[in-house]
Image 1: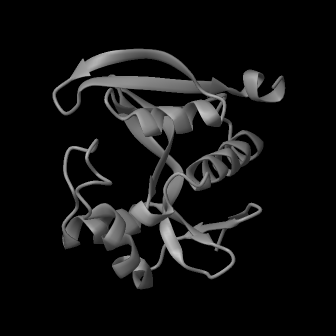
Image 2: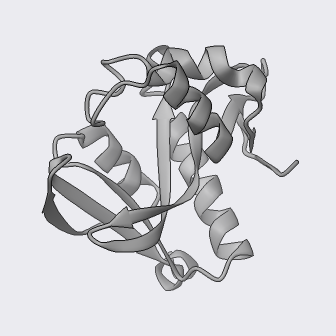
Length: 162
C-alpha cells in the first residue's frame, strides 16, 4: 500500500474501514456547500473505492481526503489535486500540507508536467489552498454544475524553480 508522509499527515489508500469517518466529511452540507451535492452512503462507498485519503499521524484519525485524480476540466481530462477536510480540522493547514505532498509526489513519480485544482467560483477556501501549494489561476469557464468553475495550475517547471 502506497503512503506519503508529511510532518503531521499520513496520506494512504482508503479502506472500507474508513467509511464512517469519511461519511462525516462528505455528507456534511456545510463542508460540501461548493460541491454539487452532499454525499449519501452509496456515493461515499464509491468515493472510497476511487481515492487516496489522509490521516493525522499523531492519532491515525481520518480527517478527510486528498489525492491526485484524473478529472474532466473544461472538456479535457487532466490530473487534479483535490481535497476535503472535516469541519473541525479546517483552517489548520492540513489541506495545504497534503496538497504539497501530493504535488511533490506527482512531479517526482509521474510523467505529468502540470497539475490542476478546480472549484466552484464561490469556493474561496479551495482557491486559497490551490494558491498555497503554488498554483496560479489559469482561467475559468461556465458549466452546468458550478455556474462558473475556476481553474488553478502549477507546472513542473514552476515547481522546480520555486
